[in-house]
Amino acid sequence: MTVDPRRPSRRGSRRRAGSSRAAAWGTAPFALYVALFLALPTAIAIGTGFVDGEGAPTLDNVAALADPYVLSGFSTSLWLSALTAVVGAVIGALVAYALIGTDPNGALRASIDSASGVLAQFGGVMLAFAFVATIGIQGLVTVLLRDLVGVDIFADGVWLYEAPGLVLPYVYFQVPLMIITFLPALEALKPQWAEATATLGGTARDFWWRVGIPVLAPSFLGSLLLLFANAFSSFATAAALTSQGQSIVPLQIRAALTSETVLGRENLAGALALGMIVVMAAVMGLYALLQRRASRWQR
Image (tube, rainbow, N blue to C red):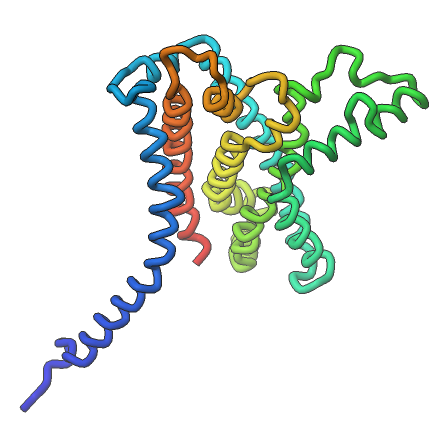
């Protein structure tokens, strides 16, 4: 009896089926986590945007997205996220490029990697307090500049406690996040590509213009979108600094949840969350496409 080598054996088929079932059971806790803490809250947020306080269907909450107050919040959130994402991406990319020339196992690389991992998650009240204590109205740097140089950085108003004051705190955690996400793309650049360019008579400029930048562009743009999404969804730092105004959408959602003066639009927070979800879905969809393209060069 002859056996066709191209035909898979029953034992191999059973082994693959068993490994597939094991993998499915292994991902079950993560799937449950996603369902309970991501999918279910998203569904509730979307659903509440289409009902009134008594549970009757209504479009008044969604129609409120066209109010000037809400549009101003989205506009502020968009420009704040875009600005801090661009600044953080440029500075972070330059730092990551500088790290390429260091020893991967050295103390400098390990220190910066560790610091980036910590600072990328450093936010909320602690970050707000750090900036208030440093460059607040009576902060250390503010007082030194005022007493020693005669420069008052708050001469034109208390900008730190308004939307423009969020730029510096956001950039503070955007830069280390960019280092974490963009450094692997830089490390994936193969030295053989530069050697091949030099062998063909190309210069360093030719390498970056024809090879380096096209290869890194998807990773850079993907990291930029990730930074945008990170800033767009940030809440705690803004809530600690700008407690007197609702300048961005996350703070407007908080106000809608806690306010007792919104008549007829008790579930306005759900409509605001729906608007944020639409923006985040578009951004993360583009991010997934760029990551798929970037992964071709990182294998």
